[in-house]
Image 1 (cartoon, rainbow, N blue to C red):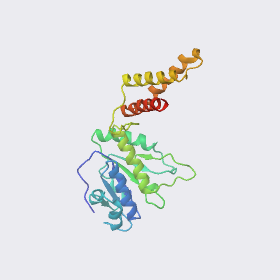
Image 2: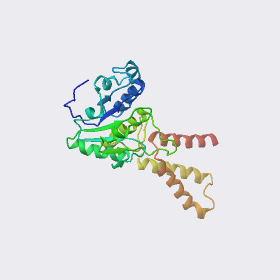
Image 3: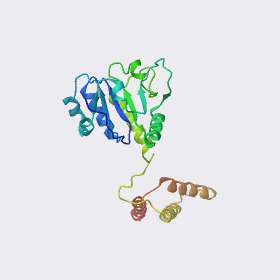
Image 4: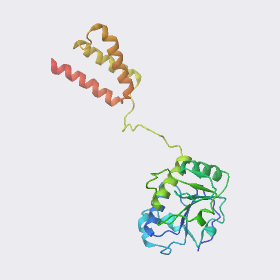
Length: 249
């Protein structure tokens, strides 16, 4: 058994309670490292420790397993923690706050920022945490899942929690545009493309009847502005228009 660490770290401790399969421990380690969570604790792993199947499944996340501490019971694993969450989808008949992973990890961020040590308990694969385990926790994390099928794999549950931790602690863009090595066209370039299109369409008699021409031109300008074209795309359209004229001639 490893002694309690004096390194608080900057992320919650992920505590796997009586995990049954080495593969799930390894998969949990991968999920943790994906999202920058590196401190794992194991409580009475069924097949002992270290576990070669866990190491094989970790696939690049062996550092998490190498530093994992092993404890005989929940009380020992969380003895140095200031706040503990228990993950469970079932009603427990215990009076505790019940939070989503998002809200829980927002709380954890604030507590860890204040120098507190936070842990998250995950139950064994077969039936999850027992009431005696949950009794040690300050609050419960419940993932909003299909009420008709709420069973999550151990590694999936770890991944969801670790993902929310990173989302709460990182500036992640909700959406972005990959420009593939080019730049967005400037407003002047878009305007010139619109002029080019209008000129060619005017020559082709597109704006008919004349009284509808202003509305049709406005719709075209609106399209150019909405598309967010790159310079390369603008140049391609200019080239296509010129080629159409050459082909007609």
